[in-house]
Image (cartoon, rainbow, N blue to C red; front, side):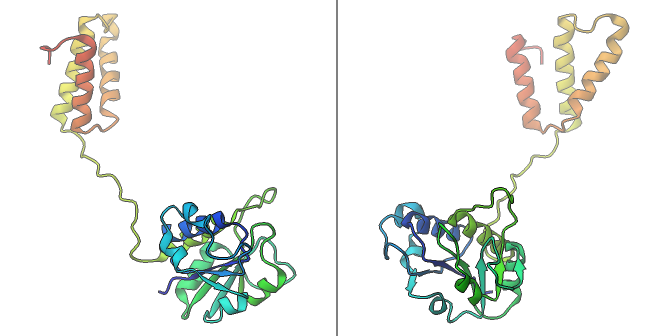
Length: 239
């Protein structure tokens, strides 16, 4: 599936363009198009903010109008928190990602300038509106935040992107090692008259056993705990 194009319409700050490029590359998007950037292009402030996403900035293409920037795109999605009087389907970033993956042809996701967002004429050009469900009392997202939300949803359906690897878990320790740990605890506690009074000793030992078997410690954790006991009690030869 061809990745969507990210179109920034009249972006105002080079730093925000750089941050948007960084957000794109995090999730496998590399094609940025700029429509009439306020401070021109290239912008020296974009590079440091991109934090290594220089290839995205180097490949960014500048256009005079949104119609020109999306001329080769079959599906255009305009991100806005308001419908601005234009009646179009309204999608979440997740639904937009599904629509892009299920359709043929190029897709563009369009973002407006930082201060006021897309104008009505910009939204009118799109096939659908993308709105992020946010707190209605504070619905302001900065440009890079909006880009990263849409890019992330697209990446979840894309192939070839690295997924965070789950840390390999060691298997639980053998019962014999747990028994050694329990015996170690009991020996140290016996030496300090912990199991008192004698009438409660059996119940206390059972509670201790339940506590020590509940976590499902692996053999490294068992060894570590026994090392802790040794260090605290100085009973080097007691194990």
